[in-house]
Length: 378
Image (cartoon, rainbow, N blue to C red; front, top):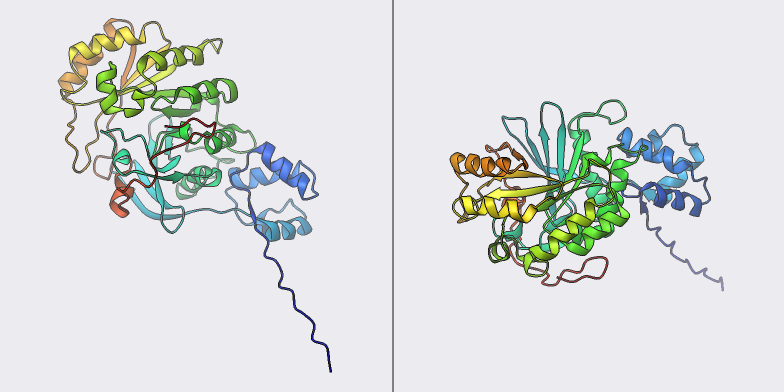
């Protein structure tokens, strides 16, 4: 009787994603698979500077290495679900990250710069009452590749290769989510953005915007040299507890010292950007302007006044132009540097999270406790 050989099924290899690896991680990976670490810089250039996701197109790699990479690695990129273009040049893309979740990325062209606003989470757990994303609830953190993919896809959609031309000159982590509740993935992406073998942005042109996660602000100081923006939006704890509820955990009296620590010992031009959304008869009165001057004291900073972008079912209204000008004049009279953000994309779903909310309603809160990667809980 003939013996039947047992067929052992071949174990499928779990491919490693290279898109989200910073240079250190990619160098370690190439060493691990028996290749020279310098291959990491070659692959980073192909992916980020030339926008190449197909290993066969990486022509300065040997054929044997290209074949190996096809077996063990990949460069995943999300697809564009929807694109909206404003008459002022602003472009908003909705990117599908998996079969349930999508995030927004916005490109804002200006005369001397092109700013890309990227997301760090699907939804947001902070429940800021004036924010469309905050009203949708929190789903999950984005991974490295999902965050840097927003830059990769935007460059593709704009038809540019960063090695040959630079349309996107600035990147702000100011889209959906609180970036400092996802430092595990945000920090490596910031390093990729600033890496000379990737996008080569200066630290002044990469900005992390936070609602005030104090321990993680200190982590920026010690681990990552980028620009910092603070979503302040109120001048006293009673009002900020309503507008920005994280204030209940990190009140103004704790937040402000962390900003002084951030600028301490830094470059002489180091400062903090104070973001302040202008809400009609809520935080735009003259007494609020004087309180803001007192709170900021001698902190090296500039104040960015942001006219509110309305979204469906909100009770807030945009401050009048007169109120904004009056507020600005008080701050400038006290020596503060002030800008008023130009309203962009009003003819599209301009408010952050609005497009994602229309496409997929995720108003149910799927997670009530958010844990920072360093172990801090909200």
